[in-house]
Amino acid sequence: MVERMGMVIGISSENIIEYKRLHADVWPEVLARLKQSNITNYSIFLREPENLMFSYWEYCGSDFDADMAAIAEHEVTQKWWEVCGPMQRPLDTRKEGEWWAEMKQVFFLA
Picture: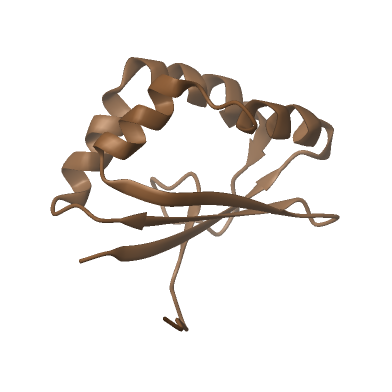
C-alpha cells in the first residue's frame, strides 16, 4: 500500500537561491537513504512571495517509524539537515517534534 504524504515549511527569502542550488544536486547518499527507507516520488514545491515550501512523497514501506528513524540516524543525512535546516522556517503551528508540519490529504484523483 502507498501512503501519500504532504508537509509544509517556510523558507527565509535570502536562502531561496542557495536552497534551490542544493536541491538541484542532492547528495547521492541522502537520496539512496530515502529510497532505502521506502520514500518515492518525492517533490518539493516553492510558493513565492509567501516563501512556503510544500513537500510531497509516497511511502511504500510497512514500518514508517523504523524507516524514519533510519533516515534520522543516517550520518550523511544529518549533515544535509545541518546545511538545509537553518534556511527553513518551521511553522509556529506545527506539532511538537515536527520540523516540516504534516498536512492531511483532503482529495485525490487517480
